[in-house]
Image (cartoon, rainbow, N blue to C red):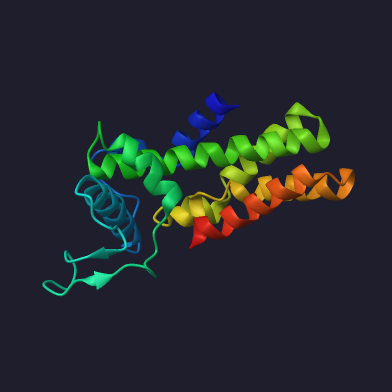
Length: 182
């Protein structure tokens, strides 16, 4: 499924891959903010600074970024990818990676629930290529929603089997849903 969803993500976000190194998928300037966020976090970590404050904005006094919209599940892959690519490319690759992960996770959850490969593949495809998600690739918090199906799966397993382990995993996934959107 990962390879299939990779191809579908590239085709479904066309022409993003043809402008991977030069353009952000941006209609409302949010992608510029989020690519700056990824750059800033890396810059702060490399220089031993706290990423939740910067003097790069509102110089010389700076600004606190505690309530700033950091899309951590876009930033984390960008930290690795930035070793090889420019800021625009890392943002675009992180968006494509998050789309693919959404598809694979939804596939896995659906397969665990219905035990039908074709139905699970369709569920993953629908979840990954949800029209609003694909139309707003400039909002990485919206793209990286793979924790939601995991939360639902472990909530169902908790209610069905009554295992504490499933309840703990459901709680962690629920917290990560909120953290991904914070």
